Structure formats: C-alpha cells, structure tokens
Length: 62
Image (cartoon, rainbow, N blue to C red; front, side, top):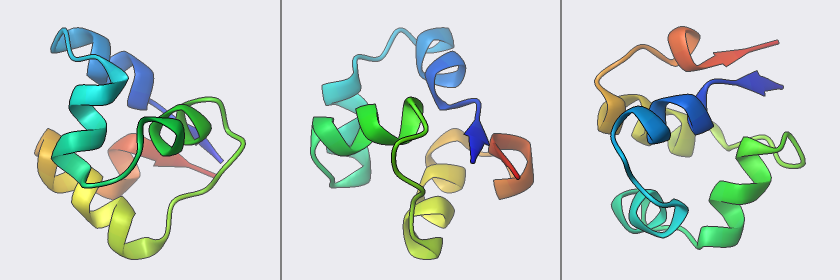
C-alpha cells in the first residue's frame, strides 16, 4: 500500500522515533509502513490520520 507518511513526517520535521511515540508503536513499525513493507491495521491507520489531521484516504492509497 502506498502512503505519504514519510512526506507528512518530513513536513513537520519529525523523526521516525517521534512519530512512533505519537502513534504508540516502535520506530521499526513506522519505518516498515513508510517503506511499504507493512500495511497498518485499521485502528493504526485511524490513529495516523488523527495525528496528521487528515483522512485515511489522504495518507494511504491502494
């Protein structure tokens, strides 16, 4: 699944560790999602959307 997570994180000058803390996941999980190696669960996708104040569709694409 494609996503804009890395771009959104960079726009805010957040490290992967900072985003991971906000999402209550590991930095490795953030890295895996950014690189497309892992698709987030629906609850995690909603949490990402809340953190960035965007809809899920604005962050993740099939």
